[in-house]
Amino acid sequence: QDERNQVLTSYLWVRQTWLDAHLTWDKDEYGGIDSIRIPSSYVWRPDIILYNNADEHFGGSMETNVVLRSDGHIMWDSPAITKSSCKVDVSYFPFDGQRCRLTFGSWTHNGNQIDLRNQLGTGDLRDFVENVEWEVLGMPAARNVITYGCCSEPYPDVTYTLLLRRRASFYVFNLLLPCIMVSFLAPLGFYLPADSGEKVSLGVTVLLALTVFQLLVAESMPPSESVPLIGE
Image (cartoon, rainbow, N blue to C red; front, side):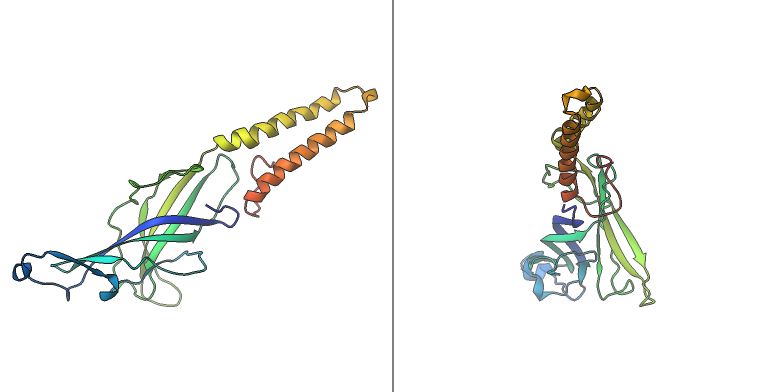
């Protein structure tokens, strides 16, 4: 996740199934062949896209084969690398959690033409590859029907919400603890005798050290109004 630009990069398998009544055959007449694999460009495909796409190359899934069954059911399972916009709230950094939404829907077909539904109530995370910074708590799915201002027809979409929680151990040992230790040096300036000549030097050194850590936090955070607790 690119927090500063508020962009989530996901490696997904987009699985779509639909029924095409024109692509059926009697398997008994063709040697019992129940299913075939053909290029996806040979069949009609729904124009399902990622609504909150944030990639400069607005593309869809890879041109993989589809599995066509004799009863007309088609399954299109294709990998995709997506970049989606995700509003990042860093108020509780580094103990924060994020909710990133992936909204899929048809671009030109309304709900009367394509009835888009999610097969499962959550995204399949069995093949999820662990991330060193983020822990995935779940990926629930929800179907929404929205009527936009341009058209009177309803447009359904399926929204997957990726629930993320930051692994804070790295930031605790490399950012939080050093800031706390440096902050404890600030009150020591009041205990130094005035004739030592080091009161101002200690104060300036502590201020510069905390400024360096603040710059490290600011480099990775989005320029928003919400200030992290460590910054306060």
